[in-house]
Each structure stands twice: as structure tokens, then as C-alpha cells.
Amino acid sequence: MPIYQFSLLIQAAGTALLLALFVLVYRRIRLAALLEWISSWAFLLAGLAFLWVIPAVGPDRRLLFVQHAALLAHALFLLRGIRRLRDPRGGRLRELLLLAPVFGVAWLTSSEPRSAAFVPLILAAVYVSAAVSFAVTPGSTVGRLILSISFLLWGVEQAVVGAASLRFEDGARMPFTVQYAGFAAMLLEMMVAVGVILILFEASQTRLASEMEQLKHFDLLLKEKSLRDPLTGLYNRSHFNDVLRRELVGARLAGVEVSVLLADVDRFKQINDRLGHAVGDDVLKFVANYLTSCVRETDYVFRWGGDEFLVLLPRTDESAAEQKAEELGRRLPHIPGVERVSPSLSVGWATHRAGEEFSATLAEADARMYDRKQRGRQAGG
View 1 (cartoon, helix red, strand yellow):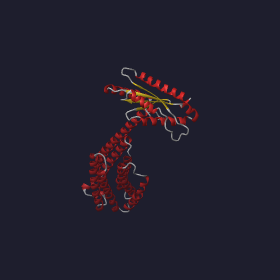
View 2 (cartoon, helix red, strand yellow):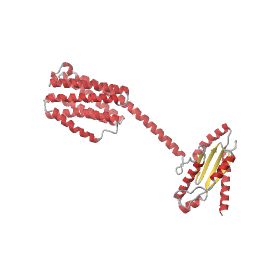
View 3 (tube, helix red, strand yellow):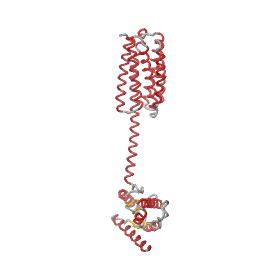
View 4 (cartoon, helix red, strand yellow):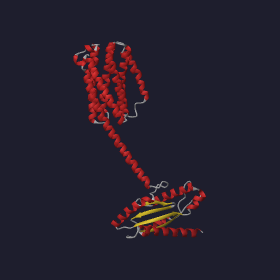
């Protein structure tokens, strides 16, 4: 077997190994660029196979056309892969129309043996372009350096093969050193494999880090959602104990008082029965916004249940809590978009005493709220 054909066989073996590696990696890392490179190296392997077979069966333009088309398609999908590595949204199907000029160039270069030399020269230009592209592509610095050097040397190797093919139509007649070009190409493909794996590993790590950040974000959203009432957006009753525990500890350390307000929407059942639950929901949302806008940023507003709301007032003594209850207990403003509804609130207050269970504080606020509601009903007849 001539040295030239043996070196092609060695290169084909290396190409097949690299293709298998790309397929295995793609099963783990579903990267669009990798799929393009799988296609590229499959075409390269087909082109090398025809290049090895043609001398045995004799020159045939149809075989030359298929071989050149495969090698040029290898170049096209190589560049598409680099583009999709830089921009995963690229690589649209209409770009496959570029296969038309590929077939045209393949047909022209297969017209006579000397024209075949232009195929490795075209590959040389593509490899140099790939070297430049990898140099400016984000990713692993070491991986980009290995790929840039590998494709640059591969471009030089193809330029030498192309120049020799212009002078010697038969590969067996080329200079002895040129006939070993397949060995050099195989080594360069192995370097390409190392560079691609480094880039893909860093890309997968970056994507994994991004997915972990998204998971953390979604986890925070779910946690926050579990603490909120879905209708009003206020904190729910289950979150109250956590907030209360923290505020009581802070109040004890700072030597200040904590007060609480309980607010109930007056005649809310009548609103629901007369105007419907949709209007009732609008009233609850309006009350939630009203309470939130009327308290300090350091205060907490909870939906306590049904038409009841609780306001926790850190660093607030009893007189200030009573004043705030009087302020909130006035008739609410008109609710936009809701006709014939002008609800009011009955608000009770209490200040927590050290050493007392907070349930007693809540009971005191609830009793005052109920007293306010009874007096409002008597005043309204």
C-alpha cells in the first residue's frame, strides 16, 4: 500500500474516532454546535473514504464529485458549528441553501484531475478562518488556544497538500514528506478533540451554573408564594409566627413594645350576598392596599382569615396603637370600579406585655374590634 494511501487510512481512523467522541459527548451535552460538528466530521469521513477508494477504482467524475461535495460540506458544517457556538439561535434551515454552491464548486473541481487541487486549498482557507473564529469566541482560554493553533496548522497542512496536488496529480508521486500529511492531519484532529472538549466542558459548567441560579430564583419565588395570600398578596397567617418570633426577640433586646391591630370589614357578608363574590374579592384587595399604604414600611400587614386583617406594629406603644386603630377605622375611600360600595373597618388594638402569651394580646385586640363593630351596628341602626 502506498504511503499516501496509508496516511489517509490513518487520518480516516482518527476522524472516525473523533466522530464517535462527538456523538458520545452530544448524548451528554445537547449543544447545537456539537450537532453541526457531528455532521461536519461525518462528511469528512465520507470524503476521506472516497479519496482512499478512487485510486483503486480509477478516476470517475461522479465519484470525484461526491468526494469533493463531502469535503466541502465538512467545511460548511464546521463553520456553522462555530457560529452556533457563538450564537445558539443561529444556524437556521435556510442557511442550508449554501449547499447549492457547495455542489456547484464540487462539480467544477471534479471536471479534471488538476482542478481537484482546489478542494484542499478551499479547506485551508476554511481552517484558517476557523482558527480566527475560535480565537475570538468566548469560552475556555486553553480550549480556544488549542483549537486556534490546531486549525491554523491544519490549514497550513491542507495548503501544502493543495499546492503539491497542483504539481503532482497522483498522490503517490508527491514528495515523501507530503505523503505523510495524513498522519499530521490525524494528530491535529486529536488536538481539535481536546480543544472542543475543553470548550464544551466550560460551556456546560456555565449552563449548569445558570440553571442552578434559575432554580434558586424559582425556589425563592415558591417560598415567597407560600408565604403570601393569593388574593390580596399580603403575608398569610402561617408566616405570622415567624415574623412575630423575630420581632418579639428584637423588642426584648431593644426594650421597646410591640402592638397589634385586628381589622374586620363591616357588613362584608351583605356585600358578598348582594353584589357577589367578585365584588367581595375587590373589596378585600382594596382593603389590603389601603392598610399597606397607611402603615410604616417596618410594619407588617397579614390577611388573618376571611374578611379579617392583622397589622403587626413593632416599636409601638399602646397610645400610638390606639391612635392608628382610630385612623384606620374611619370609612374607607370609594373603591374604583365598584358602584354602591363604601365599606368601613372595625379595628381593635392591643399592646403585648412582657411575659404574657401573645394569644392573650390577640384576644384583647379581638375583643376591642368586636366592641367597635357592635357600637357601629348600634349607631347605624
